[in-house]
Image 1 (cartoon, helix red, strand yellow):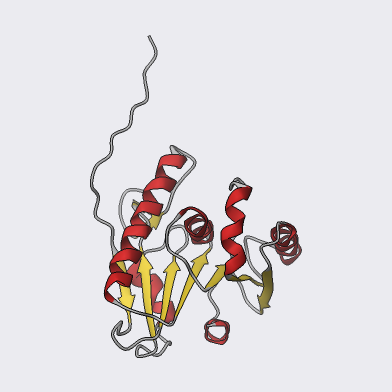
Image 2 (cartoon, helix red, strand yellow; image 1 turned 135 degrees about the horizontal axis):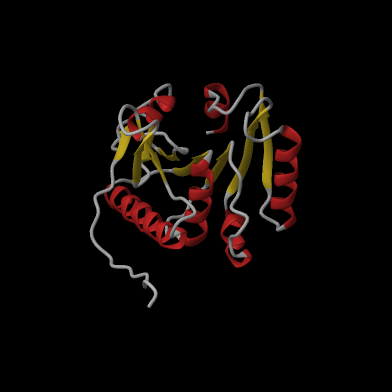
Length: 211
C-alpha cells in the first residue's frame, strides 16, 4: 500500500509592514520581497519616499526559515517546488485579502505593484490570477513565470509594465535579461526595458523616477 497525499485548509495569519499615511497619500505601492528577505527590512528600501504622498505596503512571504543552519537570521519565501500549486493559491488568497482590506478603507489615485527577485514571479501571478488591478507593474531583477497560462497575459495589457535589471546583476546577465524581455513582448504585454548601473538591488533613484 502506498502513502496517500492529502490536503486540508486552515486559517493562517499573514504579516505585512507599511510606510506612509494612507489618509494623505495619493499613491499606493505594494512591494513583494525576494527570497530569504523579511518585510520589516525590505520596507526600509522605500523610506526615501514622501510618506504623505506614498503609502507603501510590504507583505511577507508565508514560509519563514533560518538562512543558515537551525538558528540565527531568518528569511521568508513565497514558495518552493514542493506542493507549489497549493502555495501559489495560498499566497494569492493572502494578497487578495490584504489588498481588499487596504482599499476598502482608503482611496488612491494610482496603484503600483513591485515584485523584486523571487517576488517578481509572485507579483506576476497575482496580477494574472488575483482580483486586484494595478496601474503600473515593476518587474524588478526578476524572471516572469515561464509556466503561466498565456490566457492570463491579457491582464497585463491594461497595465504600464516595466522590466528592470541592473547591468551587473549577479543572477541574470544583461543579455539574458534582454532575451526575457523580448519573450514577454512577443505575447503583446508591452514591457518597457529599463536598466540601471548596479547589481541585484533596488536602485532608489530609479524607483523615484519610475513612480
